[in-house]
Amino acid sequence: MTSDILNKLRELLPTDQVLTGEDLNDRYHHIWHMDQALRAKAYLLPKSTEEVSQIMKLCHQHGQAIIVFGGLTNLVGSTETDGDEVIISMEKLNHIEEIDEKSRTITVNSGVVLEQIHQAVKEKNLLFPLNFGAKGSAQIGGIISTNAGGLRVFKYGMTRHMVLGLEVVMADGTIISSMKKIIKDNSAYDLKQLFVGSEGTLGIITKAVLKLVEAPTSRNSAFIGVNEYDQVVNLLKYLDSGLAGNLSGFELIWNHSYRAFTNPSTSVKPPLPYDYKYYVLVESLGNDQQKDHDILSDLLEAALERDMIADASMAHTESDIDWFWRIREDVHVLKSLCNNDQHFDISLPIPLIGTVIADIIERAKDIDEVEECFAFGHVADGNIHFIFGKSEQTDEVISKINDLVYGQLKAIGGSVSAEHGIGNHKKPYLHLCRSTEEIALMKLLKKSMDPLGLLNPGKILDMSLPD
Ligand SMILES: Cc1cc2nc3c(=O)[nH]c(=O)nc-3n(C[C@H](O)[C@H](O)[C@H](O)COP(=O)(O)OP(=O)(O)OC[C@H]3O[C@@H](n4cnc5c(N)ncnc54)[C@H](O)[C@@H]3O)c2cc1C
View (cartoon, rainbow, N blue to C red):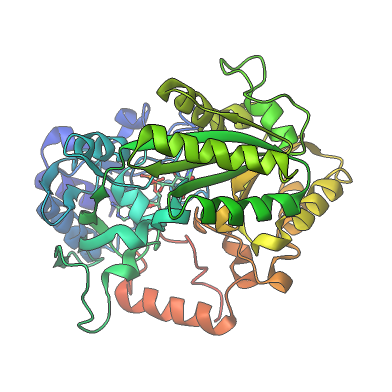
């Protein structure tokens, strides 16, 4: 059976697009696990939508499960394999087809890396606003499949707000194409949105039309020290109103994480002393560098005078801005300080963040195996990340920490995933933020779009459990 489908895949694709056996040794399932050899039946490298469709027709005939690989930067185990799957990697489907300056759209293959899009549209004085630490590896297909968020959601929204058109290959190989550049389209169900955030479980994204905006010509940033969480919330309202729509980033870093992000082994110096409980990193995007710099600077000076904040450091040059954001974006620094790292990405009402997170950090001290606990996040979106380091990687310890972090979410109307998705790791906790009826409807959708359960099996939903 296995050799049958492998032979057919080899007949379908050129030799260098079908990797098996020892050729898999230098492949991996995640950029942070390059030392673990990939377990899979075969690794395919299609170069066109037609090839993806032919692969899926074959897999459908043979009941062969597949996993799509994008940039492999997800943080929920959604590209983990068990050895029986065929991998479809999108890395060779990586062309930018068109930048339409008048429609302000870009049309791309799904294997195009986010940073490539940033560079290409910058040359046309346009901006694709999505931005996050993994931009040098994450591919647009993976980004759409996880509905990624990041550092500018507050101003521009999540990925789903930027997708105008999609081309998708379904489980049976059917190609669904709606590559329109129009902004409004209420002609019945918005099918493309089904695939946004579905983590490769409903279809394989091969192309996308993305919405662009005019590139701002000014960018300003500041690091701000604050000692009370209520001041963080007040500062958000104050800057949002004072910057009149130009506030584009508002990131919160707890003191312990700030120290770690800027520890001596990194090449970055701390812009502010280690004296404050919280550090807020803000970004404003506008159209007049000097004027916008002065507006932010004046607002911060007034905030200092009124004791709304404890300290602030303005970035005065482009390299200052890069320095500030490198601190926040280099999450790998925190990960490298953790044994057996465990990541969280929770959503909660903004006013409750201070007390809920303080409570989690305090109670984590009672778990003997917890060695590290870093908190930081996109506070203006109500989205906080945690990275825990621990002495043991047993299921029991993992569950203890999950129970600690997720414990209060249902009662306060939060979510176990603000932006990373569910994948493998959060599957047992989906019921904390989705009702039984919602999960049943999700399963119905999965069954009707992928009746043989071939696409990324076992991820998001446990189809073997009763509804
Ligand atoms: C340092 C770092 C910082 C990060 N910061 C953020 C952040 O701020 N915000 C945020 O939202 N995320 C963040 N992430 C998580 C991650 O970068 C995102 O989830 C990203 O969108 C994943 O894209 P990818 O191409 O790496 O996808 P992969 O990891 O390759 O895949 C993710 C999922 O999408 C599926 N998939 C991939 N390509 C396709 C396709 N073409 N069609 C269908 N399914 C597909 C996969 O099967 C898998 O289920 C961060 C990760 C790292 C390592």
